Length: 193
Image (cartoon, rainbow, N blue to C red; front, top):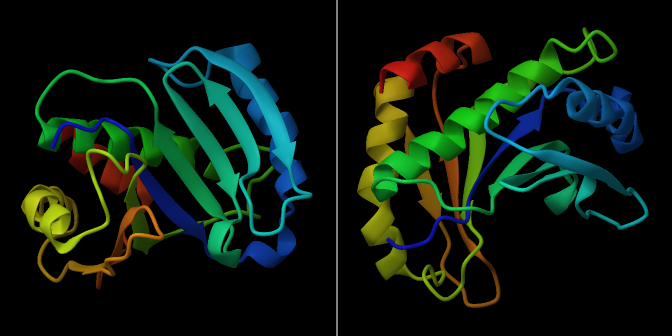
């Protein structure tokens, strides 16, 4: 797989006590403190007016990081924009590692503490590249083994991947796992993969 435009989304457990505009000062603080290594953080955009849209977006040269409302569910969405070296499996690992790091930063942020927790037993993987990754069974057959291997190394047995082909949507795989480990445990595990 040639694409580097890989994305992961983790959902918020109890989104009712959060509004996407609450992420604006948090993301601005990330820019000021250079909170995310390997990223040149540039600006924050608030799209709360867009129904089930991108929410609040932290724009960096390397990726966009969203407090995302797509599909009507609040979550953290990390979309890689710039290439990283390595095989597709290594690029998958890098995108997931950054997603986990961002989620951990949000869960440990003093202004959001005790108000945000992410589900680790459900996630979405997308490829934002219709040319290299059309939403077909063939694309799923090509990337499925690498995605399954990465997730098995993180979660252990029982990972379920669900793909619904269709030309009207981006390539997307829903991820379900029987375990719900803490983000810190997943961050530790992904460093060993």
